[in-house]
Image 1 (cartoon, rainbow, N blue to C red):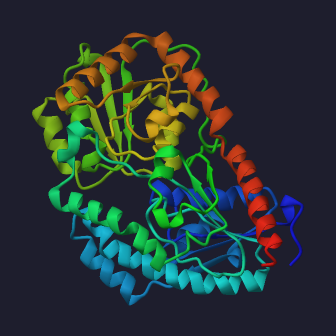
Image 2: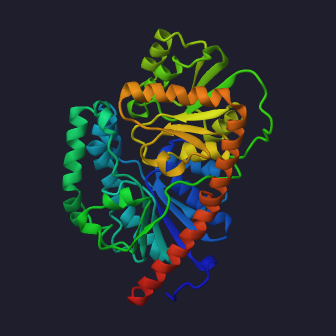
Image 3: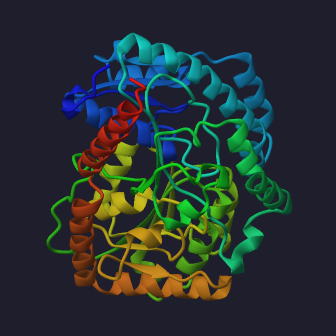
Length: 428
């Protein structure tokens, strides 16, 4: 196959187990790559799991010939049935890992067929984003680009109790075993290019894959056509509305957000809207009751991304108190909506936010964190002009650095470089 010199001549295969806006998290990433590449007129194919067939069929009705699915097998169903009864971290590292490995092997076999059948020039595996997780995409007949990966996280020192002993032991074991695992399943060590979101993630790559060409590229982006500023130029007096968006799980620290909200000075003039669902919802509703917050805290449950984007039009500030957030796409989406953001100065949000567009709260210990989170809420609530100024700065930063269109521009350059190197080795 001749080297592709025009980006529009690329034929890209995106491989990901989950491609979905409903699942949230990293499942959004391959969806955006596929969407933007097709909108650019670039031939793109998608290989994913049959569980998202209905959603993708509705989202891309004219792309049936470009999307292929691996079947839902007895292995998938059995490991899911057992794993869903375990803590999420334990499931992720045991039955979830088994399920993902099995899916990857099925995808490797199908990817090789697709590459040959459609003369694919680049295979891109955006997820899983963990730098230590293995890839099975070996010898598929085209150069493989993996990432951007994002991870190598731990809890802040003062919050290690958010992770149970069994979960902590499993994480330590997986990290210790990751270099051996990546030798046994060598997709990353034989990839054309690895992409990492930051230096923290680069440091988390197993020793067995560190010789591979590695490029830094932000993990998340924003669809600026969906997340638009609603046109606020004057803030009307009245209730100041804060929002949290995400799964209601322990490490998101929504319990600490509720504690902080109970301490604000002008409580009667503030509301907190929680968009998301999860295993902690019932206990959080009970906590809100005990803190006498039920009139001011609204639990909205899970909503589709487009509905969340619409609801954010009526919000004045996003708060993300997460203690284990590798990325934090919701921070960028709020910035794109022209909202100031209060977030934990740890992990992904600390990469995105600065003093011009939000407030970062150091997570040293619980009492300090709750007190400073409460003070940040007070500060935002008391100063409408500050909210507008931070919102404008956040939108401008997203347009400069995190627009999905700009991200795909860079990705196309990476595809071309990987294909050129692959051709120079006589592989096409």
